[in-house]
Image (cartoon, rainbow, N blue to C red; front, side, top):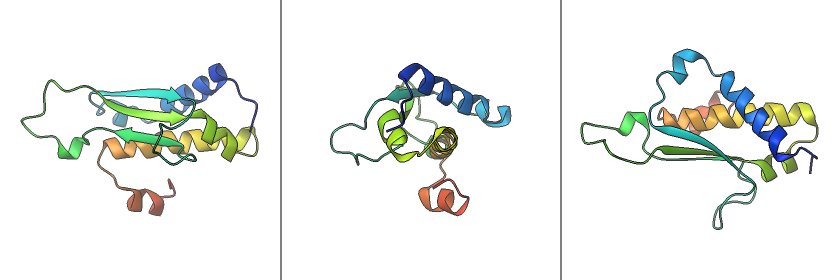
Length: 117
């Protein structure tokens, strides 16, 4: 596992978020980005990120008063997967974009086709 501490990993996630074009971030609604060390019990141990919520494409006139969607980026699996610093930076960026895409209703098949698998 790469020796990247929690604060540095948080900075990587923040930089990945800063790299998302403002045209997209201004469209994101009622979503929070979190960092956790490991996926929850019952999830795959090598899961790098997870989107939980109602995608923008599925929201309708009855969508109100709900808790924010959650995008969680997992530090442990990411650092076990990446072989070096550059790969860790790249995987964090890819994972952040991947999970944001789910917020916009883009499924895994399309993300894989776009190179964000």
